[in-house]
Length: 266
Image (cartoon, rainbow, N blue to C red; front, side, top):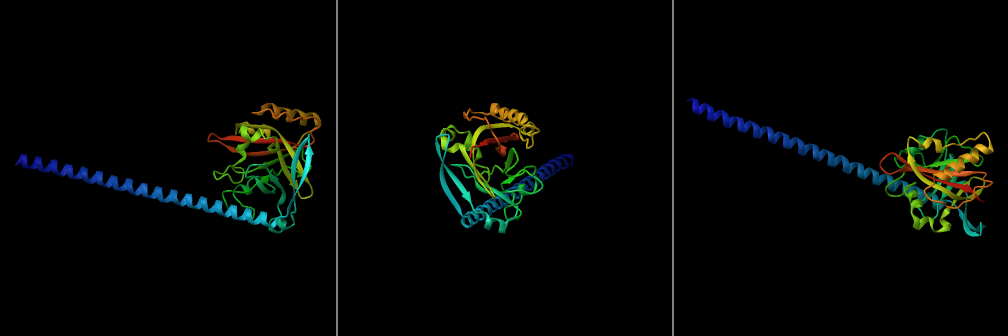
C-alpha cells in the first residue's frame, strides 16, 4: 500500500511539473508573440511616418521655386541656390529659411519657434511625427546672430539630418565643392564653407552651442575652438569671419553628437 502511494505521488509530481513547464512555455510563447506584434507595429508606424515626411518634402519642393546661379568663392566655382518662400509661408508661417548640403539628402526648409522641443516630434505641417523637422535654435536671430544653430534628427533612412554623417567620409570632403553649404533666409541666400566637423559627448556639447557673444574677440576665440576640435583640417581661413552656421544631430549609440560648422563666405 505504501509502495502504491509512493508511486502515485511520484507520478502526480511529474504530471504537476509537466503542467507547470507547459504553462511557463505557453506564457513565454504569448510574451514572444506580443513582443513580435509590438515590434512589427512600431516598424510599420516608423515606415509610415517616413513615408509621410518624404511625401510632404516632395510636395514642398514641387511648390517651391528654386533658382541657381554660379558664383566664385576663393577661386572655386560654386552653385548657389535661391528660394522663393511665398508658398511655404502659406503652409507654415514658422518658416525662416532653407538649408542645402551638397551630395547629401539635406535639402529642407528650416522652421523656428520659441522653443527647441516642438519640432522634435512635429512635421513641417505641424502634424505629430517622430521624424520631426529641421529647425533653428530659438535663441538665434536668423540673419543676424553670429552663430545660427540648426537641428535635425539622425534618421536611419537618412532623412532629416540622417545623411549628415557623410561629411566625416574622406570621399565626400575631398571634393571641394561639397564643403559649401547653402543656407537661405527669407530675404537673402548665402553660402557657408565648412571649417569644422566633429563628434562629442552629449554632456560636453553645450559648450559648442553658443549663440551670443559679448565681443568680437570672444567670437573669434569660440570659432578657433571649433576649428581646433575638428576631426579634419579643411584649411578654411577664419579671418574676418562675420557669421557661422552649426548643423547638429545625434550620432552613434552612446549619446554622442555630430556638429558641422561653416563660415559665411558669400
